[in-house]
Image (cartoon, rainbow, N blue to C red; front, side, top):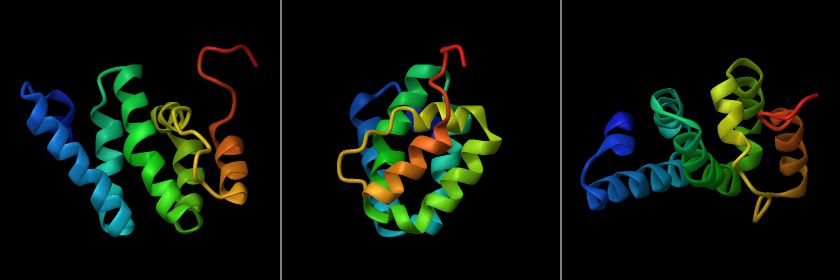
Amino acid sequence: MARAALNHPNADAAQWMFVWVVEMLQDYPDEAWPVLLALIAVARDAWDLAVVGSGPLQEVLVAHGAHVIDRVEKYAGQDPRFRRALWSVGPSDISESVWTRVVSARGDEPGREA
């Protein structure tokens, strides 16, 4: 399903799948978490990772930041692709305490010298 959402030739179908993933993460963050990880795993490039980061990852942090931040930190520490997606999350409606942890978890900006 994750590969289909990112690679689907029909933009309307791909958009529908993407909206479904966002809604599932908002309503059922634990059950939908593997789908988010799958989207990150099948992302073809930095653009796909940015789309996942600014979409589903952003929305789960807005809706359930305190609940998922431990997982976010864990995966950011283990997976450079996850960390790259995390760089596309913005502070918008994320609580300040969660946002501070997001910034720490994502580390240095990709492509920037330490």
